[in-house]
Image (cartoon, rainbow, N blue to C red; front, side):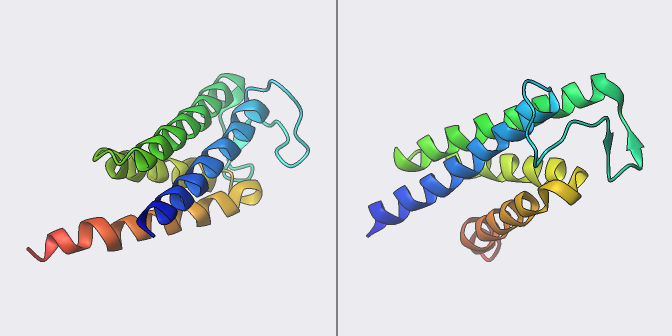
Length: 129
């Protein structure tokens, strides 16, 4: 049963990470993605970051994707470092998807659920010791 849950969790995390690659591709821009049109503003149109800012923003999307996929490997191979990496990566995911809430709100919700899960399962029990 534990193995099934581990593989399922790793699959969800890896899939979420691979979806982050869409943000990298769209905001660099390497290709046109209809759901994520290239722009040079974040927070709706409130924050103009320019082309260089969007390149950096796209690199954050790539970092999140890599972090999620590496985390999935850590889950499946039963490493001890996967949950702090997932926490950091999910937090970064919340930040970058919230900056583009109009298009990426689903990612904010999914990453928030991951963070809540980590808090409840891994960190909350340690606070009571």
